[in-house]
Length: 267
Image (cartoon, rainbow, N blue to C red; front, side):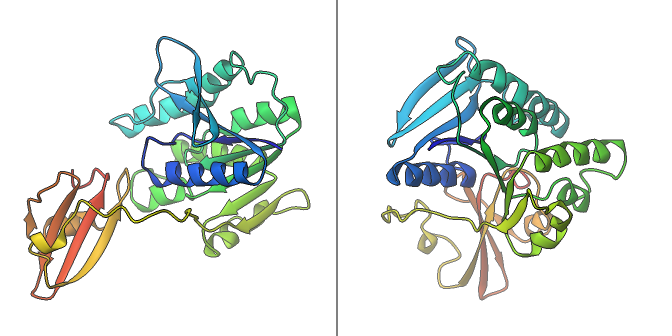
């Protein structure tokens, strides 16, 4: 089968989305299918490039960057994203591809128009890998208020759900929230996160060389964007760390909390 896998992230990025899409694409290839990963790229000199990574074809199409410093600029860039991607897919060697399956990773929530066009052109089956319930979590964090902007995001999300034949949610608790979207033509199922088995290459964080040595440690992995509770950690005796990629927090005599990742709340 010819399978399109669509996301904003893919190696050499090391986000969870990039790693999971790589492992999924390589597994499809190992099973004898032909996966093609389609991702946006901030190219200015050409509309598309095709490369082979780990035995998988990767189509990078020119699109505006979406990792903007403000939520407003990011939202505007992501709203334009599916249209820019479709325009440049039409210029690529895959312009007439007859996809058997189109699967995409969300967030972001804005791929709906692109999926609709690809499905209409090729008659593909569609699968949404849903990892975020947006805009609800943004409301919970106070980033979005229930008003016109919230309703606009809800409409965009609804269109994404509408073009999906199967929606794979991250946890069983998400099933109840999306139950109204289940129908004879649309299945809602739990699709747990996955990772391929890889060799242990070690870690550049040596806890024994920090004040966490000898303590019971909790590791907090931060993603891009805001997450609740980081403000409280920031007020608990922060110490500079040896690496810019992590910081060490100590409270009391027996517990240590180590935050690692690329979130900007503590940057």
